[in-house]
Length: 155
Image 1 (cartoon, rainbow, N blue to C red):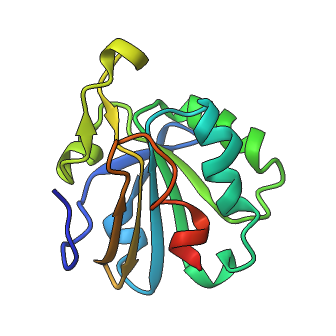
Image 2: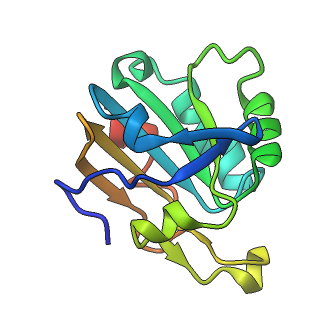
């Protein structure tokens, strides 16, 4: 499982549409960043509490580049991003991990098929600096909303 000091996996994610390729190893190679993993776009906890907490957090601008990732396709993530931050003023970018490659690279997948139709990502927030993991906050039950909250991660 992902731990402090690990490098960010060089895995292509998608933004906006399937052709919009994004590699977080490149995006976060220098400077600070936050990667937020969620079990499902548009799910109640993700949409009502977890991500809105980041969008509205007063210290978000100090966090560097911020990305939300889910095992969903780029179209779903794009629509979800628009629903939470219509004018994109937060700067948070919403990326699809359609086949779960990024999630598996950090060993953050859990068997969610009975509930969500396929295996999904645990809920987490990982802070990075210059391409390396600085802090790992993974929800112990995979889906809760405590250690990965904006208040706990951003202060």
